[in-house]
Image 1: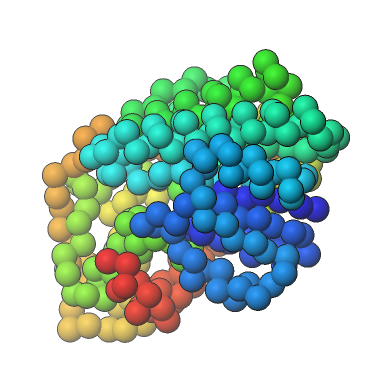
Image 2 (image 1 turned 90 degrees about the horizontal axis):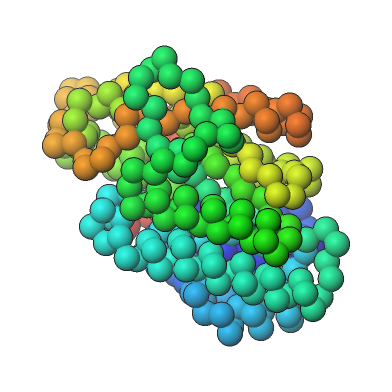
Length: 334
């Protein structure tokens, strides 16, 4: 199979590219190589003939159209996006340009491509977020299903919700074979250190204060990046065109308890004169900070017979160890 992956130098994208190439698939990675791109994450595949990395913005219609017609992909997996909520609050236009306009551009290229080159099993897989559903206000609230309304609360989640709706519209209006996935928070190796888990690890290693918004009671559902990628590949194989699928682990934890878990692992692995938890520093809460994200993955489990079975504590420990073994890389990004 031949795949175009957008954002393949990103955290999730790089893990996906590795899995596709290791599965003997041909991959073109389209990445504009922004501040959070990590070409080094794919260095082991540098000489692999199955992978072609191309530096290009997803808004470059002419160049990407040419790539489509020359490569003739069987699918496009669209991950390229601006993704940090804090940055979206500071500079929302960047998120509009990339997440909305970029997705529109790819849909239009796909529409033209499929009108000229028939691909019976082609799929446009759009990788999105659970943040499009908005916030759950209580611990007891029922997790979001695919039928929940979109109620985004940040410029980031609004831009992703908009891109989801574009993908849906191009499926319904133009019969583009699309699938949308909405996933919970990811963690694992190679995550750019603006995200919570690598930030906590970095601050501990540098003996600096760990900034925690508000009281740290905000709750997130977490999935290891390898489990997310495995879910995407299963959806590519078995997912129904025109549908959306939630991808989650069922594991929820609030930010302060997560911070303590990481500190405890570091206390064991590289003891300091006092517990790393002493570095926790509560700071002013973020504007529009959603209280809780949790999604229901029953559709994925029932229809595609796929369920995440990983152990969070084991994977979190492995993640901490990976950052310890790659401390120079971590430092270079901050």
